[in-house]
Each structure stands twice: as C-alpha cells, then as structure tokens.
Figure: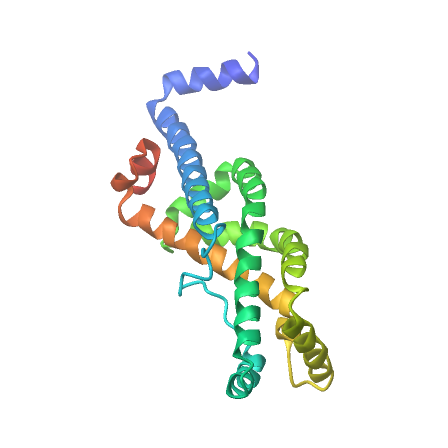
Length: 222
C-alpha cells in the first residue's frame, strides 16, 4: 500500500483524522484569505492620490529634526518649500505602495499550514499582519526606496536637509533613518501599510460574518 492509499484508508476509518485534516486545510485557507484581503485592501486604499496625504492615520510628517527648522522657514515666508517637501514625501509613499501587490500575493501562497494554524490560535488581533510584516518588510523596503528617491530628489529642501542631517549624524545629533529623507519616508510608508493591513485584520476577527466570506466566517467566527 502506497502512502496515498494508506492516508485515505486512515481517513475513511477515522472520522477524527478527517476532521483534523479539514481543520488544518480550513485554517490555511482562512489565514491566506485574511492576508490577501487585508493586503489588497490596504494597497488599494493607500496607493492612490491622497492615500497617505489625506489620511491623518498614515500621513507622513516631516522628520523630527526638521520640524524646528520648518517653523523658522514658515516664519521667514518660506512655508511653500516646507509644504512642497511634505507633499512630495506623501506622494512618494502613494507611488511606492502598489509595488507591494505581487510580493504580498506570492507570500500568501507560500504560507505553510503550520504557520496558519499558529496564527489562527493566536490571541493577538494583528497576529497575521505581524507575521506578514516579518516576511515582507525588508524586501518591500528595497522595492520602495528607489521609487521614493525618484519622487523626492527633485525637491530642493530634501537635498538640503540630507546634506545637513548627514553632518549632524556624524556627530550623533541625528540617528537612524532620520538622517535621510528617502529612508525616512520608506520606513514610514511601510509603517502605514502594515497599520492599514492590521486594521483590516481586526475587522475580520471582530466580525467575520460581515466579510461575506464563508471561509473567513468558518475560521475566525469560532
């Protein structure tokens, strides 16, 4: 008897085995559906005009070290330059987000049954999103950075900030991604994207019936 015949024989003889197998299959299908639903909804919502700029939850502010300088610029009649940079930063995020779609879909398909079962059992309202972020944040950052750079490099204030921040970073006054507008925007874009995916996951877990999906209702409605 080969392995397939052996498995079928056990399933036929044991209703418990059949239920367990179905449960694992449902868990994988449910988590994949939740991931894909949340990811594509977030991409659609953020990857359009004013997706970032018009939403206070994800709107990207000026880097912290630039806020004081921005006040001075506004006081000296240069507020337009500040507004231009902030708008460019958010437009860059909106332009980058659609590039996440293909990676999201391939990551969803590659998820293992074991991972799915663990996520379904988790009590965290954003367990699926957190898992997703762990798998995709780094490669997405690599995809987003060139797009963000292209969208912001034409803004004179961004270039000036980078030059000053680089010097400040050299003496420890500016740390991390705050020393470069493009890296800062890329990080905030990812933060906003996963925030919105998490919001979708919370909705699914809170009211799976409302999704209209039979598998989501079955897996998350217990």
